[in-house]
Image (cartoon, rainbow, N blue to C red; front, side):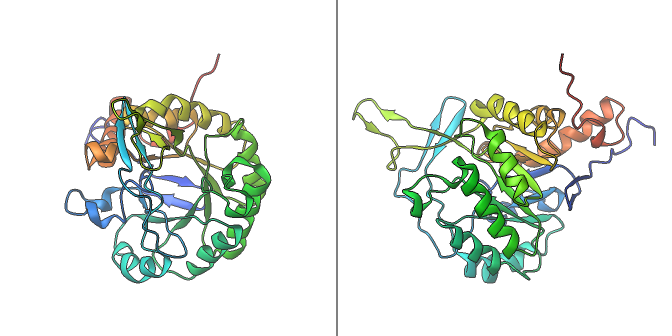
Length: 310
């Protein structure tokens, strides 16, 4: 087999997490994985980040709660999920049969709630890591999102790290003045990696009825529209912290993923693209392999963090 046809090594490490390739699915866009199992081979993914898990089940916001926007999508799902017990009893037994990393995304509305979910996942087989969504409203602080305050972000992170028996990744909100400040505080609190960015806050208006399109008024903007912001923030944070970064935000193709990897992210997550093509994440995997072959790269590691800044 000649060098051009040889399969490149796509394996990467994200702190203590070892992945067969750097492509994960983003939380909230891929359900619990099983929903996509008839459409693609999930075992070819680097990993699956499941729908956010809370201590108790949540129905989420009333509809309409998704609206398409130019180059993107607004969602106000409201973190609907089955709750911790149902995730452990009904979802995880199927997930742990996969030959791909399973990352449990968790959230809460108080520091104590985050800790309780992390503690509830302790000892659960089949979970490779925990991803902490700190973009949630802090009910004890008047609804301010945890991820907009460095001290509160650190408190949540520290609590989850103390309660968890798995690597802790923290997903950062872009709705801040300086994301580097939040990244530093979370790193110091013990996170082993960071995911960024979460959605940007936005809204859409029905001009005939003169009302918000979303029942929740505002929602999270995702998709290609936010990719340049995400790439920029990833680069800022990579240069600021010592722990690894996972890039997410508007990745539709392998070329988009490469922007994040070149900027220094060690892995990426594919989210909104899955609503367009359910197998988008696998298309990215295949595209990365082809790029490596076409450029004479034997390992995807050779491209990570190679941005030339003048």
